[in-house]
Amino acid sequence: MNIEINRNRDHKESIPMQITRQIETMIVEGTLAPGSQLPTERYLSSLLGVHRSTVTKSFEELRAVGLIQSAQGRGTFVSDSLWNISASKFSEWRSYMAAGLFRPTQTLLRKVRELTMDPIYLNLADGEMSPDLLPADLVADMLKKSNLPLPLHYPDSKGEISLRQALSSHLFRTSSISCRPEHILITSGAQQALHLIAQCLLSPGDSIAIEGPSYHYSLPLFGASGIRLLRIPVDQDGLLPDELISLHKMHRIKMVITSPTYQNPTGTVLPLARRQRLIQICEEHRIPIVEDQTFGSITLTGEPDPPLPLLALSGAKESILHIGSMSKTTAPGLRLGWLVGPSSVIDRLADAKQQMDFGTSPLLQHLVETFITSSAWTEQREKVLLGLTVKRNYMLAAMDKHLTGKAEWVKPTGGYHIWCKLLQPIAETELLERGIRQGVLFVPGGVYGADKGYVRFSFARANRQEIEEGIAKFARILEP
Ligand SMILES: Cc1ncc(COP(=O)(O)O)c(C=O)c1O
Image (cartoon, rainbow, N blue to C red; front, top):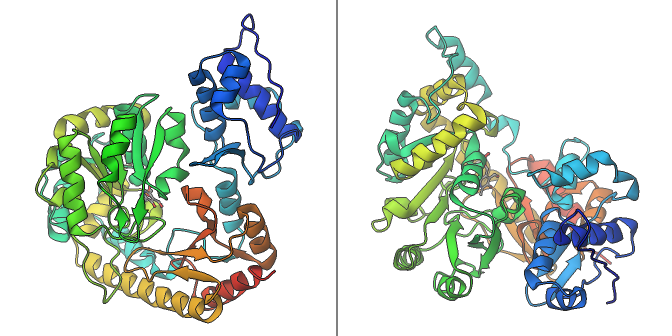
């Protein structure tokens, strides 16, 4: 396609910024329509007489704000999920916001999140449990019984020592992870652990490898830090470790981020042999691994135990950072997660956390410590796993009834989600719009970097009736 872009070396804006701004204007004004293909980076760089990395930088910027998307082997396209973008959004604030470090969340995901706040929709999108599975009464009871004085001081930025001690025993008991309190950093959810890693351990221009598709594709925090996400191919059992070797040869991978157990969004469980091979390859090539275990302990009732986490396997312990969270087993509102790693890394990240937020609330830490050291933890966990298993079964039954012949899926053995492949894919914006008209919400797979035609359903939030109605409505939107 022909597009007209000018560059002016005397202009006070950098050349990449000039290119970014002109393409952005064309998208916002509609000269470049949603879904239309952009010229290749190579073509544009020769057209403008600039180095290819200049155009790459602009494309990365546009990709980070969700205006364009690249599909491996097919090229770069204007996002077909541009909601309500209009020229009127160009204001002084817009240029300030564009200059800020944080990138906006993908438009499609923002739209889904906004709508999930509205109770008129059947919510098969949220990665969050229904209120009946959250431990509201238990928490109220624990607070009532708590010994005064409650901790209200500035906390240790690594996390309160008593919680780290309790967590060290808890991780050994529940996941065979052996670590000392100095190897643990308490964070505001797993999300902050990922953010600290991106900010403190990686630099702009670094390439990291993640599963494709992956939850991590949905996080603008990597783009904001100038980090390139490269996909490790996966099959029904998760990532293919040997693919990492060629990826590393081509791009010098600085880090692998993986969710080996109940991966979000696919629900896959990496078999033991692949875990060991991944550790071996990363050890040989000196690539650290971040193991995101956020869903790792949600083994549904009656399903086989997954292999041990990477950190609990022998091998490259010193080069693994392990992330966990209370969000999926207990309650996301606690905003409490942790990162386990070598003490030198923990000290560095704790120092950054100190600068960021002075440490996680000691009141919450006290609550979580009381919870994981009491018998209530086991009871609550059993209740949650059973509740989720029942909901998964309702969803599978509804899918069998309404989606057979229209989609394919695999029964997940853990986590909150069913990853579903549509046999006749529909453009994601159109699919979501049809869903909204029918009153059902789900997450289109493109949010996670999947190829066209995938959808993530969550069974954790909705009740039986909502699950059944939601899937029936979804089946209707697939009809021509
Ligand atoms: C794979 C994965 N990692 C991390 C997070 C962030 O979780 P938290 O609520 O602990 O910040 C999520 C949230 O859904 C997730 O799915």
